[in-house]
Image (cartoon, rainbow, N blue to C red; front, side, top):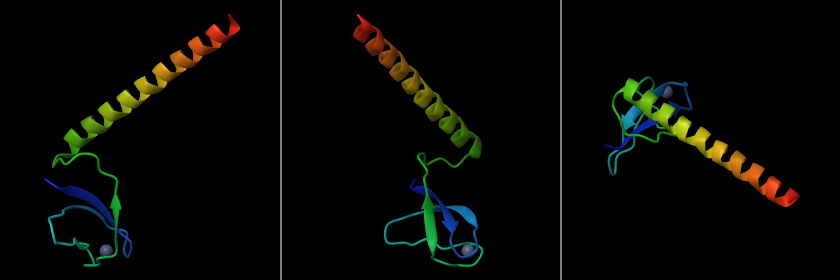
Length: 81
Ligand SMILES: [Zn+2]
């Protein structure tokens, strides 16, 4: 389901909304359509599930950095040879 996080630019309310074709979400607090869509990678309806997904993505990201660090170290070592 196309579930997105939004922040109302008029009153600061943050909320999730289903965005269907040809429909524009509006702020539940002030009905403003002046919204900023926040980055939301997963369409889930459970906060705990989403947190798990974020943690998983974060770990994958850390692993990528570590692999790059190893690659950099090997490149430096090879250069010294
Ligand atoms: Zn609002």
